[in-house]
Length: 65
Image: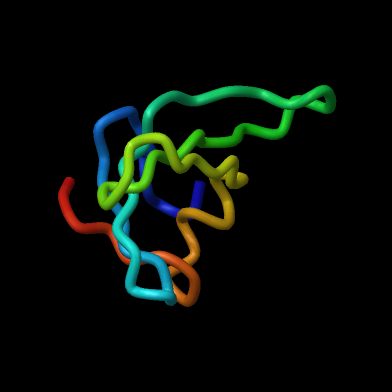
């Protein structure tokens, strides 16, 4: 995945300056790995993002390793 091993607990900042934490890794119906993200500002807010998108530095910046 573009050199980033995405795991639960990792945190990322999106272009919109929101910070997200990987809650879990899931696979969709065609075997594309996705990460379920939980917003740090409100844990009830979640987003499902393809891991390839999460690994794209133009879209998300890792906050920890």
